[in-house]
Length: 266
Image (cartoon, rainbow, N blue to C red; front, side, top):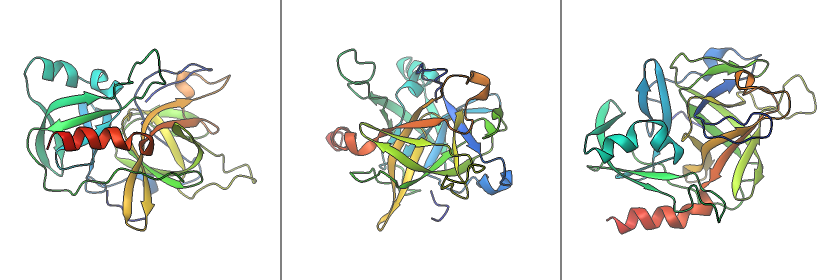
């Protein structure tokens, strides 16, 4: 796959909405995971907080981007728009204003399963780069996904370590595909694991980032990063260790809602 184109902590067995970044294999040179600013230009961060780049989003239409709903309040996006102020993001070295947010109707639902998705509308159409289409696949299980993010760096042996603001990518394999997608960070020291050369997982800093899949027609947005499950013995400081499971909203389950918002607005 060409270079064109994370979140929450679950400590013990709890699920929380905290943004994440990329954690990598301990036995691969860190530079192999680093991207240039021009790689995956459709993926952008929502806000800078000091050196940190908080939450990611992906351009899926010339007027719309897709992210995790909890990122709307985790950044200053919701407050800024509510106050009638400009909220600007940088895409391909140009600044663009987000002027409207649509959260999924089942976000924070107490009746139906929660859907942590939001669509962000730009005030003006974006011509460059070309958007990444959303997935309508039903066969993601076993497929390889590509993660892109800026958040906390770390190794599978130790978990998250520090936030250096680097844009990184990693790959993983979909191990579960029901209402959400899941992927497990395999330990390369265990010989039974089919570990990918640039395998990685989510860490603190990039909720809302995409899980991209390559098809015969190009890359698509198959998932949006919303969380990570870690078992007994894990702590916030060690999130992202080998064995952790990353969770993504499964975009094919919500393609009708996404298209209804985008095309109703046109």
